[in-house]
Length: 386
Image (cartoon, rainbow, N blue to C red):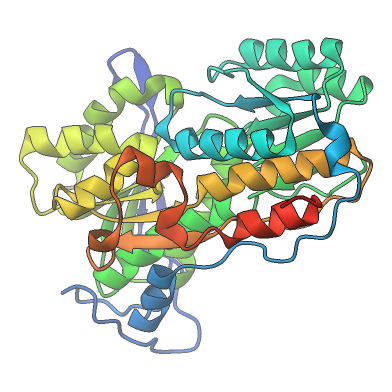
């Protein structure tokens, strides 16, 4: 089936404008018939096999080679600032827990400055860090273009910067990233689950978050590219929203489903989209529609276990990433080469594996959903500590 792209007009949802685009089908399948999965009862042909999904369910370990960091103990008493794009998001709860534990072990002070999903607020945090000449700054899910002046001031002050979940960052003497690749990978896995579960015949509503180039890139290179390349028999509808417009998301989802009553999957780019999606489906009593999220927050995994719309969630160990962020920041602060392609563990969750998890706030924040905590031992050893 050749790709067909048809753009629908923008639709006013309350005071927000949400663009809705329909992509009927995707690009044609390369090389003939693909292997058929045994996920759902769809009538298409899936390029995503059960073996692939089983491997994702088992999980992918994070970076295991941690070079020694001589002089790590000399950072004791210094201060690192962490700036999440919006601290209230549950996506950052395990990351903050990891940051706090790692900072305490290293003996550094951790200051959290909420970005508030606001460029001015983010710039204010960065300016504060620049003026105080902090040991390092860690941003999370914030593109430098979102607060250009603040990032420029930080660079001018020579304060080392670690960008969390920012793709395509080349390490320099004062700048590096952690978790960049997985910002795309988990959105890809969410799409693959729908393709597998539907046997390549999903009619999927995709929620794209357009806060900044980070979220735009993760959707286009992850979710959308996966449907295009791996599911010629799928139909996708894209609605765009921002963190500031999430209150209007239920209306946007309902509107899209009225336009296409055959939608049977709704995929949120991030788990922050999932509550609004569930609200829309609950209101319309659309019990047959399956929801897939990404990041792996507690509420989404609890919904999977309770069979409340959510059937899968592509997660990343935020707790492990918090430790990696502190380690990377320490390397830059000491003038040591950053670790390239520094990635936390990941895992695809569904009904087959959530039953074995500790689905509590403690479990969500200690990294146990993704395996053991041997990463901490490796990092602490690299710091020359016990």
